[in-house]
Length: 108
Image (cartoon, rainbow, N blue to C red; front, top):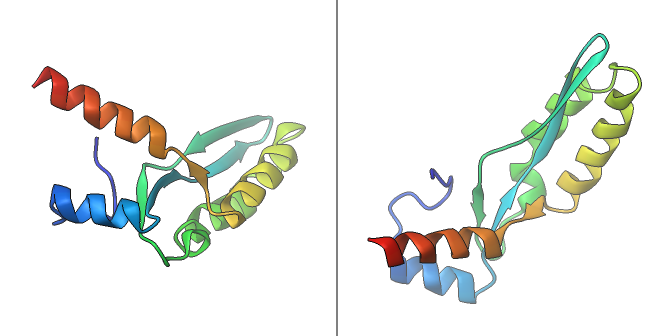
């Protein structure tokens, strides 16, 4: 599992960031090809306390705006959903990531 934003961080530094309000998020986006619309999510990003999650999700919002809206009927629907979630800071997956890390540590 490659998480963007934790490169070079130790476990204790990550724990401190989590206590300060850091969280793990994914950003939805969609891409349409005529009558087919594909709804996808980005990889997991770590957002540190005080960082703008909406700024990190901007590329995924732009992707949806440029390539997602024109697939009928789901393109506009998925594009609007993606934009709303991304401008609110992405979908928080902190609990799932922490559970996966804990499970991995238990099996090691």
